[in-house]
Image (cartoon, rainbow, N blue to C red; front, side):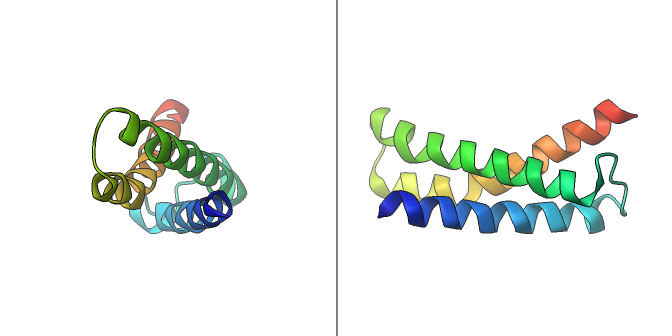
Length: 89
């Protein structure tokens, strides 16, 4: 059940990051709106899973894991969208 909640939360985070990419970069969407959403969702899910499973393996506490899962997928998705825009120039 934890996995389903984690994936659902990361999809929401990816959707928010994909939507926020438009106002941040003034609607410059080289891969389109759908592409921004897809890239942000995939990145958020990947980073969320890495945080969920790797942070405890490195010896950090559960509160550190929760903080990482709350912040890093969003920032990672925005970073990937920025890299896509920089590469398309």
